[in-house]
Length: 179
Image (cartoon, rainbow, N blue to C red; front, side, top):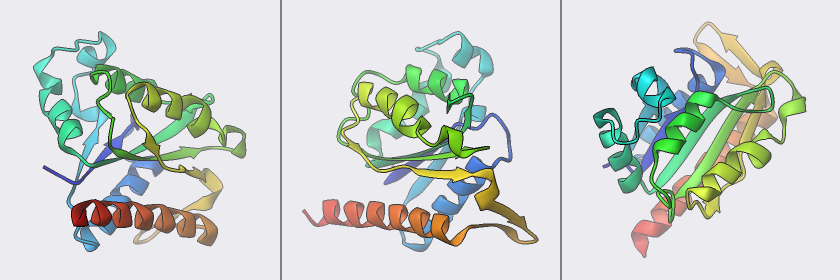
């Protein structure tokens, strides 16, 4: 069981959103917060596309969602919304499966025109799944993300928002343990 389940909604093996999710995982590791990452690429496309809810390929995923205390979801934004693969994976989850979990959405996009995609497309779906502790998302535009020889860096103000979001999540998780 992991405290935090990280879900990648990117249809690409390497993308800005998957890099941000990997960075979140390494930050949580450094803070001794147990975490595990799942990607839409981990599941048979046919099971996702045909919504095979009872497929054994989703059994472990559903169990991980059930036992996680928090979930971080990262997705690129295409045409004003999160990826179809992520929507198909979320559709597999039972009703109210996100109840009682802290949710942190992360989105990447080509332009600021998609700034409200987290609030207008992703958060409503998460709410339908029972999420009530939906944190402010982190939105990163391509021009704020810079590849380097050792990985990537974010513009300073975006890095600060990202660090603040993860820090608040860690504080929430530690407070839950102390109760």
